[in-house]
Image (tube, rainbow over all chains, first blue to last red; front, side, top):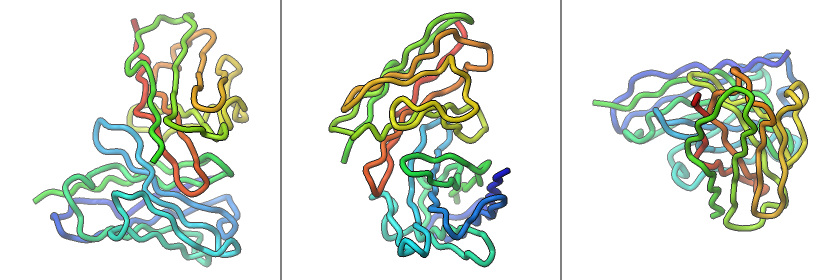
Amino acid sequence: EVYLVESGGGLVQPGGSLRLSCATFGLSFSQTWMSWVRQAPGKGLEWVGRIKSKSAGGTTDYASPVKGRFTISRDDSKNTLYLQIDSLRTDDTALYFCATEYYTFHNHWGQGALVTVSS
Amino acid sequence: DIQMTQSPSILSASVGDKVTITCRASQNTNNWLAWYQQKPGKAPKVLIYEASTLETGVPSRFSGSGSGTEFTLTISSLQPDDFATYYCQHYNGYSWTFGQGTRVEIK
């Protein structure tokens, strides 16, 4: 069975940085394309970005609102996905989910890591 | 950028009702359209992908239809476990866009 476990969330001041991790279990991580999706409190889902497998180039794509501040990376030796968030803003406050991509949709999701940006 | 618009935003229904949620795209989607169910405090769960393919393990009361720019999620007979928020999602080859969500609540 596939499990995704996010960690690293917390309370951060505006302008600060944070790195989220997503540990994966039960899948061939190195071959899996991965995404981050966030959800602000009481709001809908917003795709943040993705990273392809290294065999597909390991390239990243980002949503326009986060481009330049968010960096997605992966460590295939640890079966772990990362999201580095810099220059945090109050509107980055959200539950951040990691998810596996399966062609045109996301088939496995973690439980989410809460990031709160506040002074 | 493509816009995905769901209607209604809130839907009140009773157990046993047939429920229909619509998702309209601002441009052609190539039918790369998925539907998710999300319950409070939980991760989304995929129900339908590529407009009409039922994900493994999802009850057959859920169905998806449509093509191009207009899609529908139908629940044939609403069950107590189905009260949740539903999202459509489009993939364009390098990014995803979600609809704003439809909350299905108890009438």
